[in-house]
Length: 161
Ligand SMILES: [Zn+2]
Ligand SMILES: [Zn+2]
Image (cartoon, rainbow, N blue to C red; front, side, top):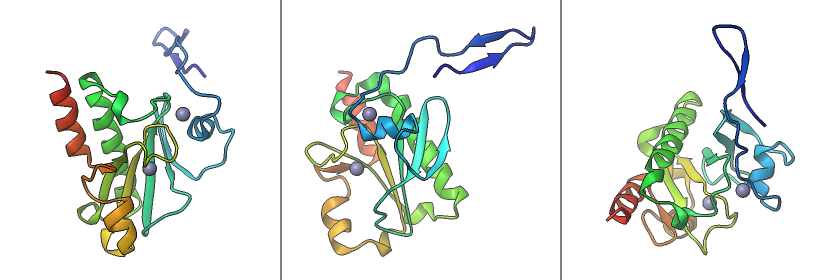
């Protein structure tokens, strides 16, 4: 799915000539290609955000890159902009939908707690409406199963050395 851009001269050029790597068995890749249904609230040529099928609070969104990145372990320091952009999109979507960012919990699931093996960021708000189990187990802040964007920056920055 190449993006076409019209130049000032009126000619059409393809913005992305190389195809984005995807996985034919991944449900999140299928959401990106619209083969699987989802309530999409944001998308651009590289990222997509949709409502979690089983929301754990008033607002619960997932931001993912269209590229099939299996999990956070495969990221390197070069991918810090990816984490930053995902975080930015998540906060923007939450703000647009009148969610409170100060009461939001953001994070990435790590294997083996990653149910769909396609990198995604959860944006959940407000934290106070989450069940005890979700707040303290499934989406426990900076646990070995779920890490905040800040944790990811530190982890990836250290990985460079
Ligand atoms: Zn995928
Ligand atoms: Zn997850």
